[in-house]
Amino acid sequence: MATETLSREPKEQQILTAAKELFLEKGYAATSMDMVAQRARASKTTLYTRFPSKEALFAATVKAECEARGMVFRPSDFDGVPIGEALYRIGRRFVDLICSVEAVCLHQVITGEAARFPEVAEAFKRVGPDRIVAAVADYFAQAKARGQLDIEDPLFAAEYFLTSLKGMPHGDLLLGVRQIPSEAERERFVGNVVRMFLKGATPR
Image 1 (spheres, rainbow, N blue to C red):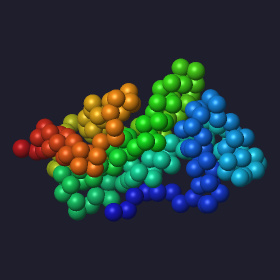
Image 2 (image 1 turned 120 degrees about the horizontal axis):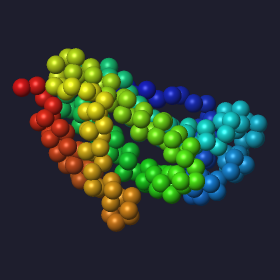
Image 3 (image 1 turned 90 degrees about the vertical axis):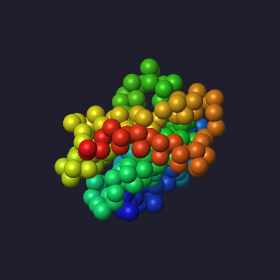
């Protein structure tokens, strides 16, 4: 199944990789554009031409991580796929994303620095959660039009579905009181969420 992944030139990808490593290692405040340029082996001119500020670079890093995990997609990507299977695939991608070491660390960085840098939290929400919710809502709207889902508000349904997929496991991960769920645990958890969601959203 195709996903909408932006193709990037090697230098841009090199910069994003360096930025992600530094944001995870040092946090947002302690990471400088000079550090990123040095680790990426790029000139500051090259860096600032592509990313005019640290906030823009941070947002691009979050966006790239969501794309790499398959959370940028079109409703047509699931044409011909049964609704239960489509929801499971979306759910697994989402759970694999939020339970990854990188995403957990990034979330902790943002939570710890949001009070000092509210623009960072806003950038994260705009290119991360908001973008994911919009993609799922678009799919739900199409599924509703096809008679596959009986829902009044696709946006609310998308938020409800994704929030259910976070659940206690994700909260425990952020607190550092549990290990990343195994493949079998994630498969079982997503399957249970999808079944419960469809019980309330399937036309009768």
